[in-house]
Each structure stands twice: as structure tokens, then as C-alpha cells.
Length: 173
Image (cartoon, rainbow, N blue to C red; front, top):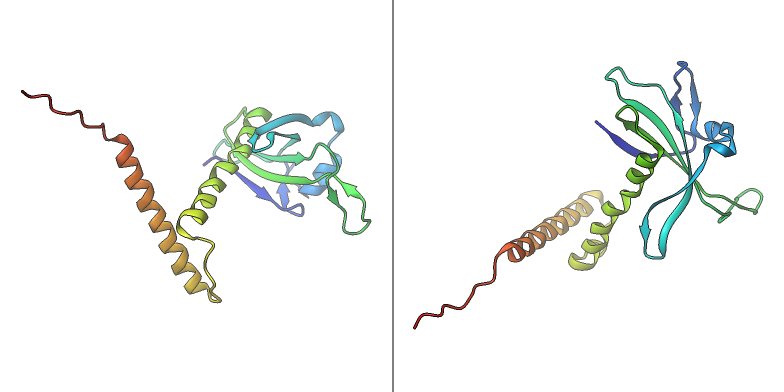
């Protein structure tokens, strides 16, 4: 199964030489030339440009490839907690792909994440997903389930209304 998942900086990943390293250690070893500036998708303020790099990880027995995709902001935008200086924000993604995938393909897949988040924003506004004031997991789970069911119902009704052809008036004499 192909996937791309966000990973923490201390994630331990397997290398092709049967050793392991943390994601942040691999980032430190990557030369500056290994990064490419690409847009992962268009946002509300225009293209989301980042510097992207990839590290080949150990392949799987099923013939899939694994990569560590590294996303770095184009300019310093995050304050370091220890020094107080502005640094570039870095994000890591573990990828499980078909052989021969390109950096462009990985960046496109990483940009698809926003397509998943958008329906949650709609659900918050339409059926009150964020309106729960509960203290226990069980009641939160019930509220979330009812909201998702309500949203599924609304989407189903809307899609049925869109697919129906408008009736034409009967012109019988």
C-alpha cells in the first residue's frame, strides 16, 4: 500500500545499508544541492513553495521503495526555543511508494493533505463538529459520530439533487 505520513524529527528510519538514523540526522547530512524549490499546491495566499529533499530508505520485501521526504520553509519563519533566533521550519514525511517515483510525485502527494483537511473545516461550519463541550472520550466520540453521520447525509442528499435532471414542462395541447 502506498502512503505518505508526517513523521517527527526523532523518527528512526531504516537505511539501505541496514543501519538506522533519526530523521533530523539525515537532514543534517543532506547537502544544500539536494533541495529543490517546488510548490506542493495552491493555498489561499497563492502557491505553497517549499524546499524539498528526499533520502532513499531501505526497500521493502514486496518491492516498494521507502523515502524520507524533507520539507523546509523557504525563509526563516520559526523561533528557536533555545536561542530565540528565527530558523527555517522543517517537516518530515515517511513515504512508501512504487519504484521510480520522482521528487515531484512525492511533493504532489504531500500537497494532497489539504484536500483531507478541507472537509473537516466544512463539517465544523455546517454541522457543529467543533461545538462539543465534553470532558470524556466516550461523549466526544458520540458527538463526532453524530456530526459525521449528519454530514454524510447532507452530502448524499446534495449529490442526489445535483445528478437529477431538471424536469421540463409538459407541452401537451
